[in-house]
Image (cartoon, rainbow, N blue to C red; front, side, top):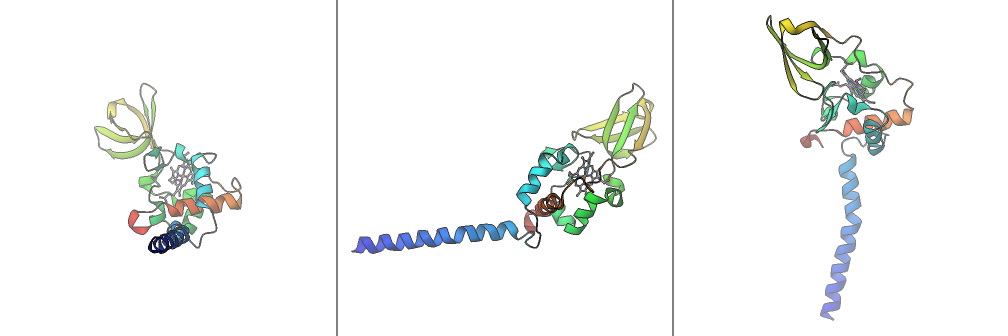
Length: 178
Ligand code: HEC
């Protein structure tokens, strides 16, 4: 009798636990953007796959540093502005985000972020995240890539894909904002 009631108690506790965990889990998943209509998992699939976003953007340890690092973009940029960044990228370009390009006298092209330049040298972070330093005498041309390389996704994504991408980007937050 003792054992049976203990078992019942355990089963009830387990059932209550099972009942609770999906609710708790989904609350955590949606807290960053419960008002967004998109599906963040579908957005991640577009980002990593057909959207080719990783060829220019870094998230965590994945992707390129040619464009801005988007690891915590959801903490910095509102969903509306994220959508604008995808539809109308040049409106968003900040100088520190712009892609820089050096062409050396030997004909090599290196693209990435301009870190610093002075009369004698120029330092960049190339698109693999490696620090590259040039002396002025090696450089034939140095310039910001114009027009900015971030393509407009106007008309290239369905509105569902756009919602999914924005939901994914909005979910990329600093731990304290999640
Ligand atoms: C060819 C390189 C390239 C590709 C591909 C690309 N981006 Fe960008 N992206 C950039 C650059 C560079 C910027 C900085 C603004 C500019 O130069 O237009 C940027 C800016 C952004 C911003 C604004 C960032 C901020 O800090 O405000 C977002 C959001 C963004 N991109 C998302 C995406 C998504 C999502 C995709 C894929 C669907 C994508 N990008 C594909 C290069 C790229």
